[in-house]
Length: 114
Image (cartoon, rainbow, N blue to C red; front, top):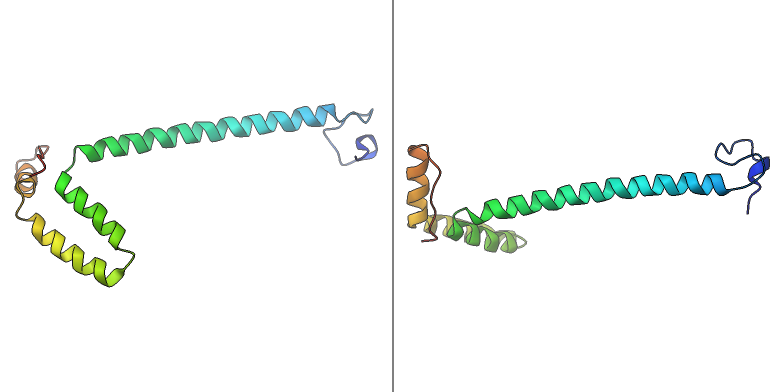
């Protein structure tokens, strides 16, 4: 253990060599850091939940295909071909027609997963 009392660069140790002040200082900093991390984690969780909730209101067929395509994208050639095929197939869905109509009518779409 170092001699804090004889260390002129140690601003957190007291003159008696007691490292209790330094330990309390470090512990307080660790606690503040942990609180900030927890606050960031809580905010992140709220944002992820909000995003997931917003996705449930989207066009289910298109989102399902997008998820499949994202997973396939690791194999670029196969993924690009599958993307073109899936995108073309979406034009025939009722959700596509509803999305276009809602856009043109400047209203929120009502997707039905068809």
